[in-house]
Length: 521
Image (cartoon, rainbow, N blue to C red):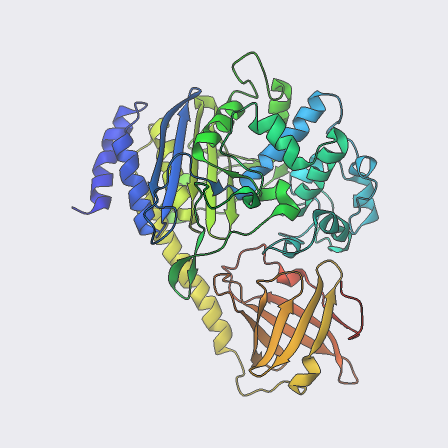
């Protein structure tokens, strides 16, 4: 019997039996998702009324190895780190050391955006809710993929990242301002972000597995390997440090540890032992909507998930789901994606951690658990998500194919290849070098070891950067503009595929040639 058929039958029993928990059914759903979306390992925890009702690992930590995923296996939780950073600030507000409406520049005199008004008016809460005017993922190339820039250098170079909209007028997800938030924590508390998180959050919550950096693990650590598709084949890839923007996404944790964190959030900071992480007043503020999110129409296959409202608070998304408040966030690193979702009215939470880049896997598992507690009609979310993923892939392939069909393959570059060689500089990223090799032109991002690849001529003065690391899935066009005298004036880039992660924000670069003997930047 096909697994999807078994799931359909079991779903009726589970919905009728709610709220009693059916572990066998959850096991079926997770294994179905794991196989359908080619995920080597998944860990899941479900909490209800302050207690763990299910906590289990599935599959393996690394493809080809037998070591299993357990409830204590570590995964990068990526942007699910953000609510930890927001909670740390809430604790400082409770202590009277900070106010949400303090101007950032009064706490960090060196803070500067590209617009003087925004610099002057940016408040602490503005750092956390994606309404600064920065473009989607603006500045992410300073730390993604892994770079050699320091956290302080990232903060300094923020002033050169151009704004796309006016201040507080629109939602655009960013990571870089959480780095600023981490600097505020250090300035106000006297502790670096990592030390504060360990002492003030991990310690009281008894999160003994958790780390503030993937750099804190060693060969004996129970940790997954990230996995990504490489030329159509799933392969393990290396962990990437995010220490230069740790407050946005560097925490490494297990579902066992995350269960205690979710319970604390659902209990509004109350640890249940006469102690609190933060006050109930701050808990309400952390979940107060600040930025309205655009709402698209859900695909027909997942119409049940259609939202009627959605907002970003401070490290969490708030929206409706089947008539109930849903508080959640997702996280994505190369080779690892996750979700933490909560139904506060029902005191339910779920955490799904995976070691592959399939959002559909964690979404189908999370929706299944939420539906159980809402006694919703049965639905095979795995099958539904699989159809959506297939269509998105097909649409992306059509976009890439359409661009290729319009290409003038017979065209030639305006200049000899040697004329494109040189050092190009963007005000916020720094230097990108074009070099001549035996095989043609090569492009190299000087701060990003993974961003090195060959430049394949596309048409006219446009090339395609084909990265040597094929796990990145981020090939990009690079187009050169010429001066009237025939020299190169500038270069612009943008991703080739619409499926490229937004943190590869090539399109925000404004590259200009600099002298060969110019000091590196």
